[in-house]
Image (cartoon, rainbow, N blue to C red; front, top):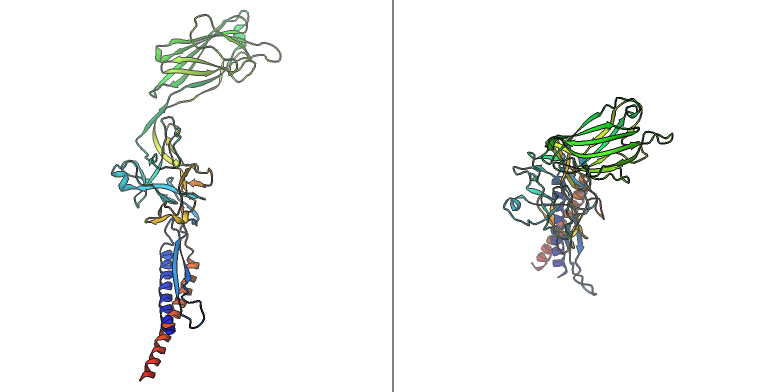
Length: 431
């Protein structure tokens, strides 16, 4: 009966608008929720009769979809491990309960932002119990080449605030000027001493003692000793300097006596290798004809530029995540060490992912297969530290939609009221 279909259409309209109001209320309730993605309701008409004759109202049906691909704006914070994605992609996380239970491969969930802080075990975790996942770094700070289509190699990012670190010295640069007057006729020929600190494999401070002994005209003998070996000689070299007008004071040749300690000098790089107690050490004394290393000028002995790598033992002071997802630990000795890398996860259809609590999502068949990208590479954006992503809710727009929904709901209620009155009139006719 046509009048009955009108009643059903009105009821369908009430249900549809009630569903729309539910999405609006959810969006407004989460207008201050970091990382929230708004839900949108759409109406679809239902047609029951397309032929001539009596028309039967089909009504309306409401469908809703979470717009996961539409994020909010970024705001700055004071916490270095507050993270947000700038652009496309999601941060991988896992449930803290799964991680603490010892699950070797916890289920990977995705989020666009999170305020991560260390728990009692040093893991970076949010207040809602989401643990940050990443690839662990090797001891030298490099990231292994893990497969990108699986989450099996992701681990909970752990920051050990009690961690100590020290880097051994493996290379050294000597920029020293030797007095040209010491190799001239009648000169006193006083040896020049230089001591350069280095750090061994255990972070202890040792020294390489360098003695420059003047010889005949423009010639010196350079002797290197290691304090860790009881000041034993680890290298001995014969230096000869140019005295021409164009290249005066620069190295011409570096030689060694037969059986002398130390590795050979490489004129192509300006470097030589000696063996200290902890292993080989590369020493740069400069290229022949260049003034960037050892020189022989004037009458003064001057260590002009002495540099080396390596650091003493230091304690970790802080940790940050850079735009490419590298988790860097900073130490009070000035050292910086990469301890993990957080990838960005991308799927072909973000809106097809399953929505879970705490602004997390799970890849599904509708979203398509996921891929783990380096942040800032491929289609993904960057990771922003000291930042959170605001809710994607536009409160003004939601309030406008709420007014429209209220009017539509009232109109459908009026239809039901009108149908009720018409049925009452029909009943009165029978009487």
